[in-house]
Length: 194
Image (tube, rainbow, N blue to C red):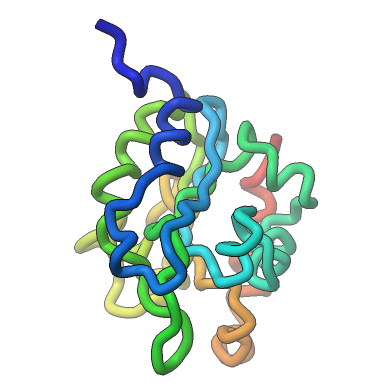
């Protein structure tokens, strides 16, 4: 018997119907992700923003504008799922807490990530954006802080490339860590090719 989840399209359709943690989401379930069996790069972020929750389009906000700038790609290249698979740690907007958005829900990554990644034939690199993605994927090899992990990005190549979150909330981090834009981003742009 052929499994319902035999293709990437069927799997993505299944994920978009997921309501695993809907009762814990103040804005309801609306899984936002994108992938293709041919995706060259996998972007593991945190969770959709309130804007992305309403549009249903991954990284369709100020953070996404900055991320595309960091990658050196335009919207057309970014939203081509043969170029980039977009798998947040939590697929739905988690709601707002005291100091910004709540952390991504913990159910999504263990439930879905491996299943999606198994469908991607030959990914070139996985971009780990923010501490949640880095802790989940790097485990004990992650440094004690995000800054250290990003600073030692080359020790995770060629499989992983850790990045800070491109949110405007991280402007202070970017100002304090000039080496990121001067030394790290040129390497990232060089590695992203189609």
